[in-house]
Length: 202
Image (cartoon, rainbow, N blue to C red; front, side, top):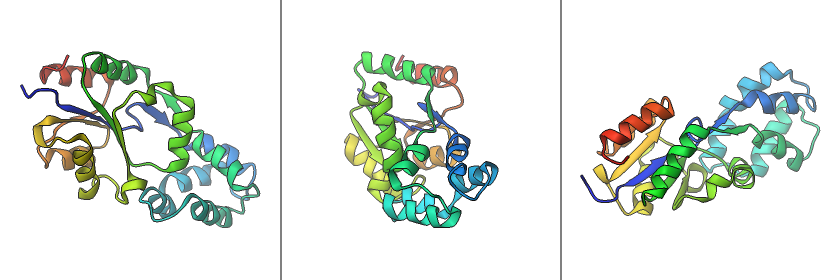
């Protein structure tokens, strides 16, 4: 058993759920596109990838979306709709709190954007109780790209088996495992708890 590994949490679908259809409904009311078109568009546009990779600012992201869908609101209105898609996942939040109580250092490791993070910080108190945060838009790379994993290792000051990593996406987990991280594909709080027990952490 290695002493005090760093425990790395993905954010979306692990600690918070998200649903772009919530944003689509609100944005559609102020644009020329129906909600069903916007739902797919918001979640998969190349602009979102560029935004979360740090290649677009929130202003240029907003302007691109605004022009594409004829959105009639300003950036503040768009941002409030776009970011308000999250809900807490209490089972994993409780699991994190248990690990913190045992003295482990924990980190957020997320493909995300600044609008989303500002909303999460403002609305979910649990989010303050991590030792550090690695965001794709700040690093300029998205999981499963090598650069963002290197940034996480640098922040935690650990590598290989001293990194315990929970993520819901198999390709991101595979990239961690290729660096000898002890990676857990997060499918439910119960399954992740069992994996952490097998690692001797709970």
